[in-house]
Length: 187
Image 1 (cartoon, rainbow, N blue to C red):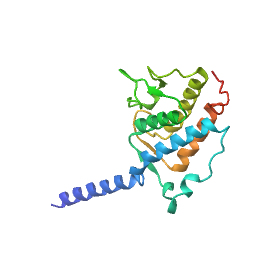
Image 2: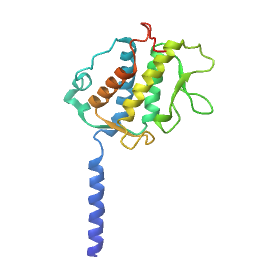
Image 3: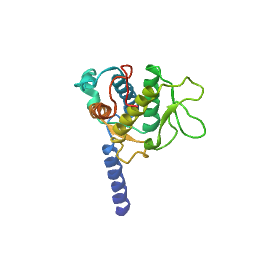
């Protein structure tokens, strides 16, 4: 009987430690990831070397709730869908290559294997604008993968609003030449 009580106690202790190790407010992470990707890409396309926002996201919420670690277990779909929406806001229609047809988000389970491109049947995107799409995607991809502790194929990311925003900002600073419609000419 004592062995059963000890085993039960150990199982409960293990369950409690796993629960405590989970990021706070894990359910909130996907919507935060989506909004930060969209905002960061839009800023990269419309501002010349935008400044890093200082506490913009956390200060706007009561009690600084975004200072908690967040988690998103649908990182690939959320990130690529947010990128697609950001491009649509800029007047660029893109799709994601994954056989058999491109869609509005990447169907791969590995973020490193997701590649945006033109949508068949849509108006062609000029080379300089397509260059912006590729450069911006590389920045977003690098930033988000840096928050995927188990690797780009894990599907899960953990971050705070501030850490993700800073990663997106610094990565887009490295990959994007300047504003989209002011003669983006890397290509």
